[in-house]
Image (spheres, rainbow, N blue to C red):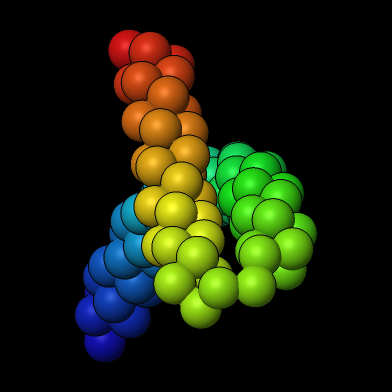
Length: 102
């Protein structure tokens, strides 16, 4: 019976060591992923500030216009310009992140 308990204790010890090994690897990868998400969030915040500045400028121009058609055009241009600026910034950051990974 003592041999049975010794074998069970050995198997349990090996199982705990294996689980710990994989848990540590998973936690390391989680830390790397969290750091990358933090960088991405900071960059997205910067892009949002740029987009807000562009939209505020177009909003100021639109407020000075009185025609309904011109105001509609203002919103269309603001949307396209904001989308283009954000898209360009993400392309640039994607190229930078690809360089960093390699």
